[in-house]
Length: 149
Image 1 (cartoon, helix red, strand yellow):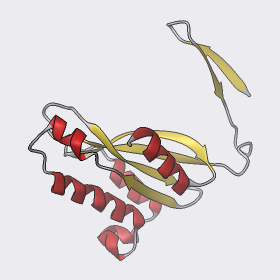
Image 2 (image 1 turned 180 degrees about the vertical axis):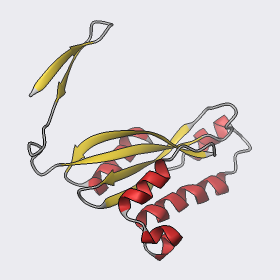
Image 3 (image 1 turned 90 degrees about the horizontal axis):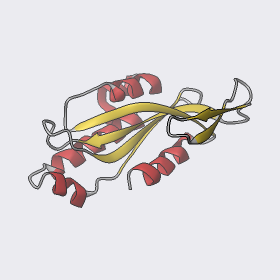
Image 4 (image 1 turned 90 degrees about the vertical axis):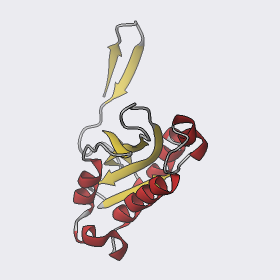
């Protein structure tokens, strides 16, 4: 089934609606960008990673890429090492296991929800979006290439 929508500017878009059981072997996933806001008071940011969660596949993962030149263009005195450490911590948190610390006991959904909670720090999650995928890990790589690199 599809719907046609006409936007205020007169552009026509088509949105496909998939009902439960019609997605083939694709599962719903959620994702959020990781943003680096080097000077929180200014609100300027760069995308530095993506978080992906699939409940059906019990998967949560993060892929990160810090463009140091873009970061330093926003704030020449940014703490690059500290920001890299924060991004690495997000990846460890998603991976679970001993490297995730106390979060290792949480399921994938709880780890994702904790990571997407709003923060007023240098590394912040963006809004959550959804999609369909057969491979959430590959989707994380695709989104990193599309939205971050």
